[in-house]
Image (cartoon, rainbow, N blue to C red):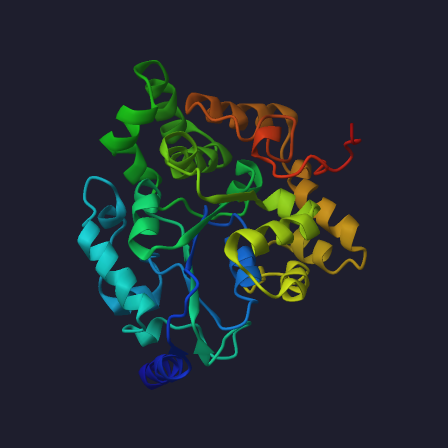
Length: 331
């Protein structure tokens, strides 16, 4: 078994030759199970593009092998070593950790590359510092907190968020802290998932400098793919529009983690119906009262990006006027 593992890492190391080109790399920031693998693969459809899939996920074997970060606490604002983060990213960018390369034969794996998309779920509080260090372009992907939470089995950083003075002092008043504690201790699994989603997004949505970021939502990317791909192509200097549009219709490589309902929807032939069902399918699993309780958690954090009764982002977070929720009639 050890021999097989070593062979896999050797193939990764031999399977890519990277020489950085003129165009900046891409930093894709998102919440786990928020569609980030799908968007990463859409961006990675471009010629000579390489990807790093969650290089800070301490649960992953390749990350453990790198030996840089082994505990979630190291990625929290109270304990992070910024120089260590930057050095790790530099090593990845310069292919000095070749065992972290994409697996050969994975979709969009390439032998020769000159640009990288880094998919990162952690370090939200220093995302713009990372952007500046890498001189990268940031894509920030949003997804409705309820389907995101329903897709997750664990919330590994929630306890760390609750113990962090950084988040409590910046974003939570004394008046709401007691309710946040109650949800953490006594809430349903869905409520805890939404609570984790709020911690994972609040620093960007309320405190981040995102004026030069590319912010896009999972739902709008599904419902308005041509315009969204055009927007991504223009913002990120992506040259192959046909490859972007083709990738939109391909399920992500981690589709095995999705439930049976999702697999069933993805096998439907009607593309438009399929996309609408992907946006709406969570409603069959969550009652109206449960939805309102879960979405009220966003208000505790002062977040208005998604609201109860609406399955897509609020209008100010949408890119295009003609993006409509399923069943909604255009004005």
